[in-house]
Image (cartoon, rainbow, N blue to C red):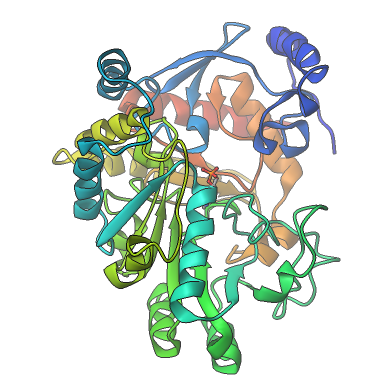
Length: 447
Ligand SMILES: Cc1ncc(COP(=O)(O)O)c(C=O)c1O
């Protein structure tokens, strides 16, 4: 269903710029998540700047920002120390050398100190790349071909994994035996033969699958918290069971911590849940808003890169801008007490939203952990993608989103995205957000 923004005149500058962009840029945007068909309908907002917890659009609207660039702006917009570190680096040293520099080693040490399972780490530019490398390593290490990935997750846009993100249920096969569904046309034929798609949060089915064909399976690839179908937490014991099963069958367990890394805690979700994957993918939170990603893990697996058996390349990998940003971001994130303060503020938001919906007539529940959360408009618990596809009310979510946007609270219009909180969000921001949420819920109820 296409709905227009309630107060179109509030966004006319963005509408004009979008029209102009559409003539030159396919779809008017440079990534699918910003497109009209991803919810930014009738047009995305055009931003002028961001500062701390706030973002401003070309129509001079100011928003408390829970979109946060889809996650990277964990320190808020233009975090002074990260920005300064990057400026200094560019002015004093340069940007790209295609030779190593010593700050890379300093950064590797910080990542290894932060993430419990990481013994060695290589940098790259995007989460998509890091996933490609992780699976290449897992296949080489095990000598096997197949990869298990879970319906509803997103691991970047490479051919090997851009499958069954949010497939339409009439193409996706039975719930207990999903069929791989490509994101779209253009994938080379045959890739799906090495993909096993499973529903998340179903340990029995994972066990059955590994018992049946574990000998052919190189990796289980998962987010430790499902953040690409709204926010879905792992069932109690699910990640522990996954770890045990991977050990039993000699399968490489890959945690995609692109969203959860440096967000759920300094050590990512793996530190919070106390699970050690074999390989970890890191990106968004790592760079404080600059493009950088990393793949790290067990020394014996990473040794395949060290010996030159598996190639990790890239002109821009570990460019000095990315490294300066990540070094500065990790220095900030590792300051004592940072995450305790963040969680205290996020808990007020989470509990406040829960109370607002509890006191309302709306069927909604709020799921999250610290600085990542989503509101599910559903009268059924959401434990995996099929639940979301069957039970979540996208029209109601749209009304909730529009109400917030029109009152100055920004997050992604997609019900399967998340709200992200940054270290720059103040108790006042949270209080204001809750005040606005109350008004939006009241408006929806009275409509
Ligand atoms: C869990 C997860 N993995 C991988 C990616 C891909 O990362 P990138 O956009 O940096 O390629 C994303 C992007 O949102 C993600 O959420």
